[in-house]
Each structure stands twice: as C-alpha cells, then as structure tokens.
Image 1: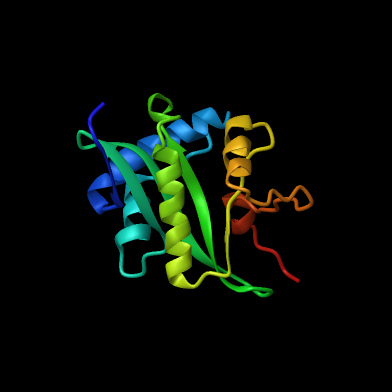
Image 2: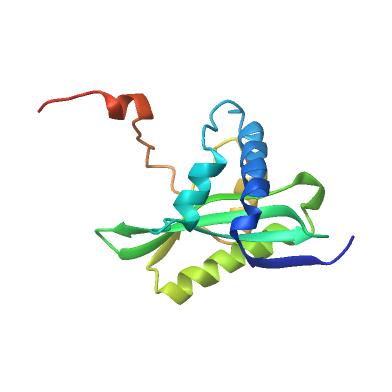
Length: 159
C-alpha cells in the first residue's frame, strides 16, 4: 500500500467524490436516491456562496475516502458542524483512514468554535455504530428524521 495523503478537498476531486457518494448510497441500500449532478456539486461547493467543505484521503492520487460537512445552527447551542457524509472504500477500511478523516472533521469543528458536531448513522449499520461508539459519541435514539422531498417542496401550499 502506498502512503495515504489526507487533505482539504478541491474542485478537481468532485468527480471522484460523486462516485464515492454513489458507493455509499449503494451500501445504504438506496442506489437510486442519488440525483445530485457534478454541476450541482461544483456550484454548491465552489460557486460564489459555498455551502459545504470536505476532506479527502487519497492513495496514488486516487480518492479512496471523503468526509463532507457544513455549518448549521442550533437555537439551543449556536454554531454546529454537521458531517453529512463520511465514506471510505471497503479495501481501505480497518487501516485508520476513516479515523483520520473523522478526526480532521472533529478538529475543523473545534477550530470553528462549534458547540457540537452531529451526523446520522443508520440503525442497521453495525460497522458505523461500532466506529462511533469506539469514539464515545452520543447516539441518540429518541429523535426521528423529518423531511420533504423535492416534489413536496414544489407543491403550492397556502396557509
């Protein structure tokens, strides 16, 4: 194995990251849910008002993992950092790659003065659950995720 390099993500990484996002969706049993395009990913991360940042792990100039995050705001705590997606290709797991990416995001949250760092993990994802438990993360089973999809947001609703 060549040396793994960890760094802040750049626009040139987005095609590889989009491929890893699809791998993650496949793992999460939702292969058809990724509708994000490379153009949208580029505009949202590198346009005039970037809304996310990311770190990558690469070996031999090939991106093998990433952690994508953004700031959110809690009315109870203030500034928070949200880890949206965190993925390492299976061949590179159990080598410390994910741990290093996770710590990079945690350090970013600390540098930004975040009051907390948050993420989600599926209740059946034993590998993910064990990883977060190993890091003594709080896993809160009391909150449900709510969302509207794109079509629902397009419906005209009057109050």
